[in-house]
Image: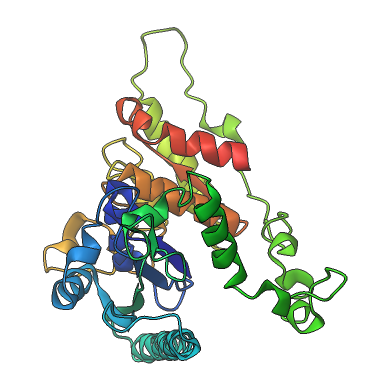
Length: 350
């Protein structure tokens, strides 16, 4: 699952990443379920997506290749009653079940097409659009100013601590009935402890987090790619073409385990790494035209990932590395500053 806030959804990198549906192979790849949360506001302004009506949001994400499934708590009906809380959980559970069924149907249909020797039809992937009030269950007003279902709930609600606000803050905190979650000695009730995942299902114990699923990358001897010359100025060679042969062989040696991919913003060919296409084409599950058969190396199960978005390529590579596999990211020096902060953050977290 990928949980997306409607404020974050206004950013350019995230807007480009919705096109990743055109690169997901329904048999070979894992599935991602985006949950777009429309709660109406960012720090101090309305969000654009939340101010679009249901039809417009539906059309937008259909254009991206999704089938939006809505879970909505409408402004005119929300309240603090228990049945309202229960209903939103019931609706979300039903939407999740529906999405899982759709994922299974997509994979089954793709397998049937592959077994019949047909190209795989790019599916329309499910996603959930959840609409709830911002700051729901918080104070509705503070000193006569609207807070719940408004941008103020993104701020520090009780910034002025006077006697009235202390009482209101206490009432707000007590409304969550904390006493129902803890024993008299302060320990968490056992029925809640039992809900927590066990063993490797715990987030901090996931084998991927600890690098336990990483596969070694098989590497050819780099010395084989030496450009030999008797004296300077006597041989013509391009370092990127030589590197293309090296990358081709890295991909070839790891092809059996599908352990290596190349990521880049439309630059594999322009950087003279064309030799990699002897091993794998460029991932493409969008529409094919007749002229694509000639010289474009488009391939539904290709292992070269190209989209004209450095941010998206970087994000793809980070996720691919987290599965224990390896990748190569190419980018022109002048454009590398577009994503150098992403790389620095990834390296620091690693």
